[in-house]
Each structure stands twice: as structure tokens, then as C-alpha cells.
Length: 140
Image 1 (cartoon, rainbow, N blue to C red):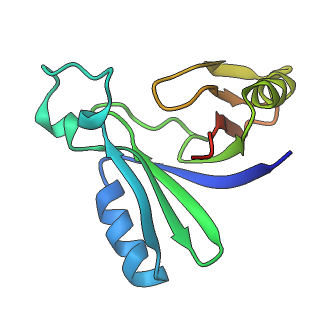
Image 2 (cartoon, rainbow, N blue to C red; image 1 turned 45 degrees about the vertical axis):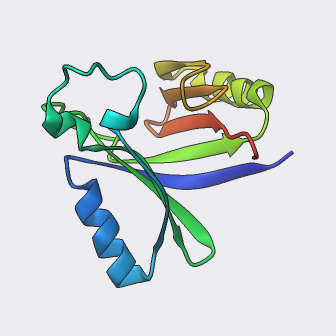
């Protein structure tokens, strides 16, 4: 079983700027980027400003990874959500087990379920106030 922990930054409409900065400052390499406009569940009638924001991006920095996204327009980032920890597994059942264990005495922000981008994804804040995203990543 492989489990990977990755810092995940949520920014207010500045992810593209941050990506360019980290590429220059840290020699980061952009591995993946998708905008809200690329997401299948975003209506065509959504504002162009929303569609251009980063829904998810992944950078390689040396031997590590860093993930980023923009908060949707007008949504302030709650305290404790600017930096979260993404736990990635290769098995949805293992992801669900981890999610349920961390959720004990915590708060579920998004239930663990299949999404358009993952066979199993959920978001929670544990009893210590630390926010985790649990994600299943299928190897291609």
C-alpha cells in the first residue's frame, strides 16, 4: 500500500501567479493544471472569471510535489483551509478507511465519494483543526 502526503495550497484567484513564481523561485515543474472551465460539472453559463481560475494544479519541486487551487469567486478561504494536507492512495477503500478514521470527532467538509476527477475523494477537518483531503489516484 502506498500513501503519499502532499501540501495543498488554496489561494484567492492567484494560483496561476503562484505557479509562475514557484517555477522561477524554486525551479518547480508544472505537472498538471485544470481550470474550473475544464471541469465537466461547471455550467457553461458560469462567469469567464470563474472559468479561468485554477481548479487543481500539481507542481514538482525537487523530489516533492505541491498542489494548488483557487477558491471560487467571492468565497473567502476559511481559517485552516489555506494550507491543507492531501493524502493520496491508490485504493478507494483504503482512502475511505483513512477518511473515516480522521473524521472521528472532526467535521466532514465534503463526504468521501466518487467524483469526476477521482474514484474516491473527500475533505475533512480533524478534531485538531487540521484539514485533510483524501484522494484516490488511479495509476495510468
